[in-house]
Image (cartoon, rainbow, N blue to C red; front, side, top):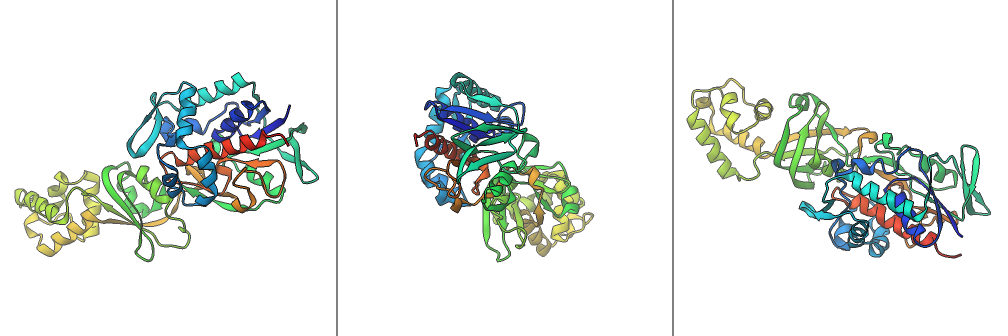
Length: 410
């Protein structure tokens, strides 16, 4: 019986183990954590956004980093295949806004339990131990070394993830092992990550959550690289929340570019209607300080920052506000600007961008072009996507391809 070792018991590792075992291969998974799928448990805020219910072209369009590399993998194992797979395991699914797919239970642990139960049913062996080295002979993988013991194998799959959420086990081990075998590692960077920005301003609004606002991101050339409606959160260091995480994936050159965030605080109102609303509020509160008059339009924590951006003193009486000042106020309400400083540390990112250079991997098989019988799947590969279930789809698809190819008779 052919023997396969999978290093990493996350989404990609578990999926690959199941499909390889279903083809009659003896599979051993090495996972240094005591439990499998720890990162899966926290995806989608603990609900597990397992995929996006879309076609292949939409998938590709949501992968900013090396999308063409995934074309074949997405063709062989599509979102529909993923949904069928989990439904067959007894996980009932639902499709929500943005075609995001979740278990009906809204429990990520149901997804992990289903994968673990299927692995157990198929006789997959779990070794709760880290792998220190991949063994090769004559340019071909022959096994791994764990705690000084060598385990033989006909093929090895590296599915160790990236560097995000190191507490779940993603500590870059796979990069080191691949590099030792001659692979090029594209420097890992954070993607889908909170943003550090104007900390003094943002910290004054710490804890404030904005809903149904439009966030736009502009680069140095004043080009809009991202625009979407949703929710965001102000923190002591800057901004976070779903909109910000999505936006971060579009800021590919944060080290050298100068990005500006613009928040439309009242997207449901065009400038004319917003001006009419402001005039109505002002007319009702002519003798109040403007800081009090704006409480009906804005959350309390946002009033002073908006006035600061508009260059209006907080204690000015409403009846003293002239047309020019009101126009500046409308400008700020329709485009509250925040200057971006940097990303938060990669350890706080949902996804790691970077990893094994895709030109060194055969996209048809996920096998290394440098070392025979060495395969890769999931986040360890230099490809990443936007939020919405696309990154897990990458994990499932690459794992499926690797499993099928590893299981073939030589």
